[in-house]
Length: 405
Image (tube, rainbow, N blue to C red):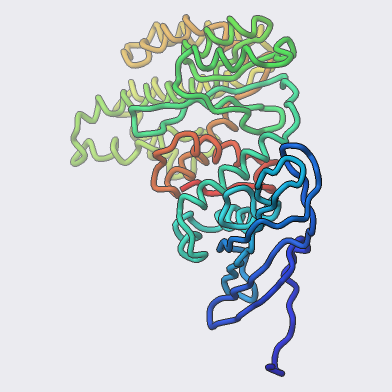
């Protein structure tokens, strides 16, 4: 017997170690369950009569940075009462599983820090097993989560799953700042299906969204007591686009000569006036002398930014009428296209001054979703993608946030 060895606890008290061997990169251990009698699943009678044994090779967590393989002597028993032959229960590994439960949980945790492929290569298992472990772990987490209280404020926004061809919609809780659900598509039906399932829809006071008509219709049908709030950043983005269109038309595709300054000022024009540096103000002043229509577009843009700082809805309504009048009196076609949007979404735009909520958090989540997609080099399985997004919530992330790549 070797006299330079120590014993290390296996950590599975249900199993009895019969034999072990250590090599350069692995432990091989023969084990069996400690039980002497089992209960027949058909008649419920206890029996000790062993019918036969079969050895099964199963994988467990590493020990001292070496792979551990357990050769389980799995027994079959014969019942004295009904004569049936049955296999003893397998609590440590699970029915028809070739790895221990704790090893599968470990695989899921490892995927938090590296890709599925890397985890599979490191642990010498298949990528499919790692993906299943991750999906099972997230599924258990989501299933154990208590039924969510319907929030007072929600947000809706779509994100691209596959380029510009396929979109999904994220439904967010703006109070607890987490993703409530991800539904397929960006249409009305799927969003409506989810909103119909809310336990207390009357609690919802307002829903923030981009100016997307299917979302508005879904909220109006399912949450009649909630007000739709048009996201202010979405409107400002349209205004900035109008300013840039004026600049682009004046530039005419020429980036050199006298048009060079227009191209170089494209970002300065969109910056808030309070954040402009001295040299940027001088640049704009020179630009406005030669292009008065550009000055007019910039002043309308700054007017919208200042308008969003109004303190109540009544003052905001008056300010919006003045802005609309300023647009009508201008000779800027790109801005006049905004008038139809301001008319069609007028009430929703003004609702911001009652419930000052935005889709900023939802847009941030969309950026996180894009990061998840890039880290996974895309997702063929949209169900895995959905689980990964739900697991990336602020509360859930600390418990389980794996990369389903």
